[in-house]
Picture (tube, rainbow, N blue to C red):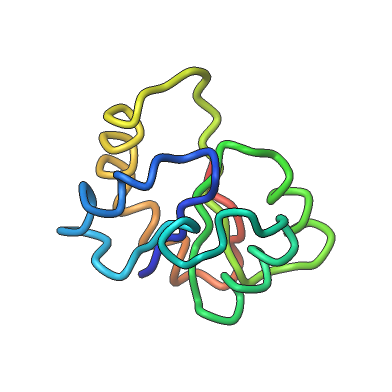
Length: 108
């Protein structure tokens, strides 16, 4: 299960969550920090990532283009990196289900 952290999520989460999401990355580390949303969507699709974002644009792309990739859409306003870390840890079982259930596309 690989998470791909998008522009609006801290790259520090890759190291902080490496114990439970060890193959995860951030756009910054992949040289995609300035890539547009459609290119990020395509990269995630080709490399089997679940996109983690705070932005509705990826939800719109998944509705328009389908899945994979799957999406974790963080809908918590003004949250810190630490809060996102706690959230992703606490939702581990739900994220596993998202990655395995063909009927699921988005975890909000």
